[in-house]
Image 1 (tube, protein in one colour):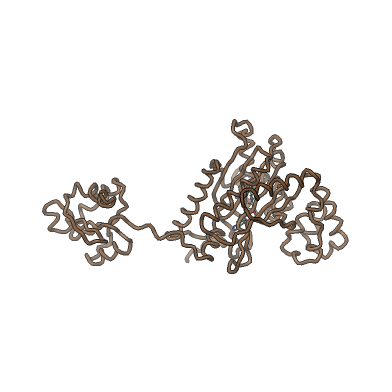
Image 2 (cartoon, helix red, strand yellow; image 1 turned 120 degrees about the vertical axis):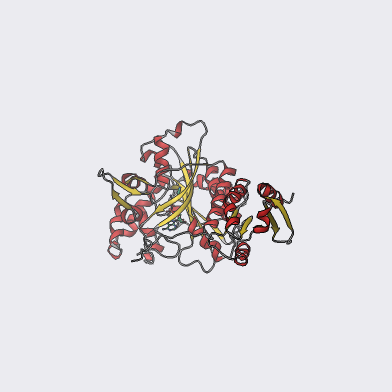
Length: 425
Ligand code: HAM
């Protein structure tokens, strides 16, 4: 019986993995420029962290968590997202006491959600995200959005749109919440069971229900923008002004509510416009979460962040025909004919690699011609030939595959000579 890969997961093979390295390096480099430092947290956490952090009326917590009991009977969950774990760590490590504030962190790693797999929606996917904790300055909101947009722009992606909204502060949210409850209450029986529970617990969630999205009451629902108090309006204005100052284009969409409960004030998503990406067009999402640190047991601390998946980024690059890389070519390839010649190859290869040369040889007993073909296929710039003639004099022929130039060198000197040749010395 052949084993099958679990639904909603993928193997990333050579050829593809190099692309991952490039986008990861790009994201890390941008974080360096914005002064965000890496944090690594465990793949699983106490289940309660997500119930409390992400919100127990959200789809993530109700339907999508990979939850299990360990042998000690503890309820653990494979992380569905990175914000709650980062905040857990922030509280446990007392980062609010660090000298440099806000604490600016980034992370990358696999996340797990039991969703119905489709193009762009996996059960295991890799997020890259940032969190800035300890400042309520709207300039940080703009910085986080600029950082996110830079990743797409610098990789050459086009038709990327920043969509922003304000969910308001607690007072504004409460006013909006009452209006929503009143709006839906009269006809709530026309909605799905989940939405009926949401009506009193969390009516905002009705707005992004996947089942009821076409109900007319959704499009006529009261907009949060009409319920923002003066502070929330001023805050949102500042965020938008900073985006304008930085020359970042955006659109305001009052129906953007996000699928996680911890947001207030700024919420944003980055969308891909244009054809060919399938039903899912959201590349990244984030926002401000000023109450979350307190909810998780820490001191009152403002925070903002975003996350994107590399899977969706790669799909978008593919759709737009953006090539990230040619496969990394080999520097050198050793061809050896005869048992005696073969016997000196391991030492020579080891010497080449120690000299910084990417080198390989044939381990399958190919004939000379086939070995040369393999060297060519893998883009080797130099071939080191060892035959009986060379071996007699303890020598090896270096051949420049581009010019055809050849040179005989002593075996011991071959690594240093090859390395120098490759550098054009
Ligand atoms: P989220 O909107 O749930 O937010 O996910 C952020 C991004 O993760 C999405 O925009 C998408 O790129 C990717 N993503 C989510 N689910 C999947 C999936 N099943 N398959 C592939 N990609 C997926 C969060 O996770 C928040 N923690 C973001 C945040 C950070 N907010 C503040 N700080």
